[in-house]
Length: 94
Image (cartoon, rainbow, N blue to C red; front, side, top):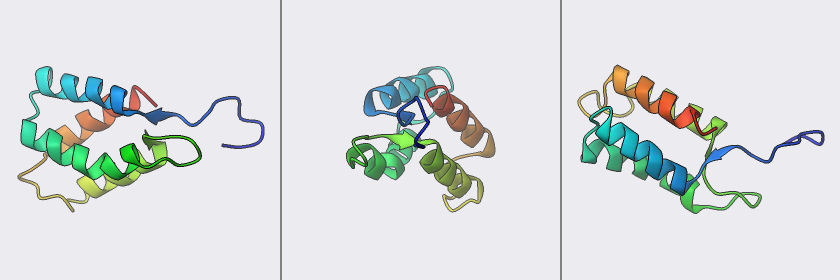
């Protein structure tokens, strides 16, 4: 981040995604296929190292949420409520 920033990049890592995925599945009843789709959409960020970091940061999460809200993913795959829930659970780790 900036020169005076005391924190390193805040990101949802693979291990944190596993926690989010579990919460979405058991608490919010997301289907396995939906969770697999979300994971696939984030895979590039989770697997690619950028400036020594791997994961989904705020910028990347916002891009994904916008894509989901704008229905670039078919509505029958994810509802507006599910998009909100996904965003809320992910932001707990950023």
